[in-house]
Each structure stands twice: as structure tokens, then as C-alpha cells.
Amino acid sequence: MSDSLLSAGAHRPRQAGLLRAVVVLTFVALLLLFIVAAPGFATVSNIRSVLLNNVAPLAIVALAMTLVTRIGAIDLSVGTSIDIACLVLVTLVLHQVSLPVALIAALFAALLVGVFNAFLVTQLGVEPFLATLGTLFIGQSVQQLSSNGGQPVYLLSQKLPDGFSAIGHGALLGIPVPLWLLLWVALALYQLLHRSATGRSLRVMGEQYSVAQYSGVPVKRLTAMAFIAAALIAGIVGLILAANVKAWVPLSGNAYLLNAIGASFIGATFAPSRRPNVLGTLLGVVLLSFIANGLLLIGWNFYWQQVATGGLIFIVLAVGALRARRHA
Image 1 (cartoon, rainbow, N blue to C red):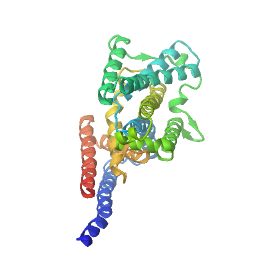
Image 2 (cartoon, rainbow, N blue to C red; image 1 turned 180 degrees about the vertical axis):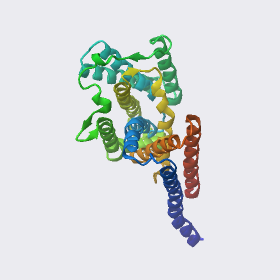
Image 3 (cartoon, helix red, strand yellow; image 1 turned 30 degrees about the horizontal axis):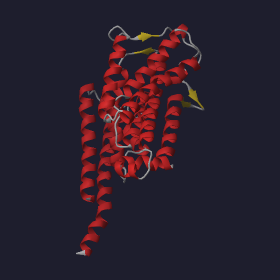
Image 4 (cartoon, one colour; image 1 turned 90 degrees about the horizontal axis):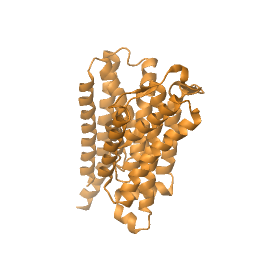
């Protein structure tokens, strides 16, 4: 009896590794297909474009989502944080406010979205899903009311301050600024979640909230911190969007929401602990971004790309469910 249990336990890591390998090999096969079917897929210009326009902004939003999902919650209002930051930056630049002041004000506006979420969750006891869903609806209404039903606000090139375009298109030491921003966010969150006592407390909150509460972990303070920091991080993408588009387009931030959630849960599925983590989320973003790009280059329209993305998420989550069942 004991020998059979030991044998089963020995097979579990190998089975989990096999399941992960199947997903990785599937992704590699898709890449090879895209390289053959879409000659422009593997070019330097295309890879650079995907990294700057897809991976960098989506990864920053997904990392913000990862911080919240780490505590067992979710933030449906990250798109609102993006849009509010973009709106404030574009408005202040349009009125010729100095760029440093405009950037700080934009990030502060995004932070206020997180403060509102934190108040609803920690002080009023609203469930995170409902609290952030309400913030999402409020944010959408505010944007539509402030833009005459959704009219974009454009910036004239001659009114742009020095350094504004560099946020989206500049480079430092040969590396584009959006990738630097992603690197700084990823390193900061990795240090917080995986190398600090606070990160261990956040993990306990996500796995066993009641245990964390009765163990003296300041759950309300850490929950508030997670929502506020997530909104602030998402606001960085609002700055990148404003610099890239030179405009504020209402509700554009919501386009990142579902993929950010998907990338976070894909990353959790690949992790041995099956918990949201920084490296796994980055892997999820790369998977989603390059598959969407490859499908676009071979001629699939946007709607079929969404179907493929949903299928990928289903497959990865199914792998995670099988792993959990085998470990049970």
C-alpha cells in the first residue's frame, strides 16, 4: 500500500512536467507555423513592434492584475485607471502644463481609482469583484460625460512639450522606454512578491485568508496597498498610450482587461505553486501577444483572434485543472 502511494507521488511531478511540456510544445509548433505561413512574423521589425505595442503595455497591466490576484481578489477597473491617467495627462498637456507636473498628476489620478477601490473593499466590506465592477461602470460614465458621449481629445504636435513623445517612442541605452518601464515594474513586483515578508503575507492571504487574519497579518492594510499599487501601475500604461496616440480615446484602457486577467491566470497555471507570479504572468503575456500577432499576419480577423485567445486560455486552465486533480 505504502509502496503504491510512494510510486504515485513520484509520478506526479513528472506528470505535471509533461502537461507543461505539452503546452510549451504547442506554442513552439504555432510559432513555427507562423514563421512558415507569415514570412514577416520573425523579422526584427515585427518582433520589435509586438514588444513595444503589445507586450510592454499588456505586461504592465497584467502585472498590476497579478498583484491583486495574488491576494485572491480581482480588479476589473484597471482599464479605468489607464483611461483616467491618459485623460489627465492629455488634458494638462493640452493646457500647456509642464510635463513633470502633468505626469505626476496623471499617476495621482490613477492612484485615486485604487484608493476608491480600497475604501469599498476594506472599509465597506464590498466584495472585490463587485467593488471594481462598480468602479468600472462609474469610470465609463465619467469618461462619456466628460467627452460628449465618447469624443477623443487630440493633441496638436506643436503643443507637445519636450520629452512627451519619448515616453512611448524614446530609448535609453538603446532600449525603448516602454520596455524600461516594464522592467522596472517587473523587478519591483518580483522583489515585493517573491523576496519580501510582505510578499509572503500576500500569498497567505490569497491561499488562506482567515488564517492570515487570525495570525496577525494586517489584511486590510495589505489589501488596500494591493489595490492602490495596482491602479498606480496600470496608470503607467495610460502615459504610454497618451504618448503613442497623442490623444485620449475614451474607454480604450478596457481593451487590456481580459487579456491581463488571462495572462495572470496562465502564469499561475505554469507555476509549481499554482499561484499568480511575476515570471508566469510575463510568459502568459508573451504567449497571448505573439499568437495574436501571428494570427493577424496569416489573415485571421480580430474576432477569430479572440476565439483563438480564448481557446488558448481554456487549454492552459484545463492543464492546470488536470495538474491539481493529479496532486489531490
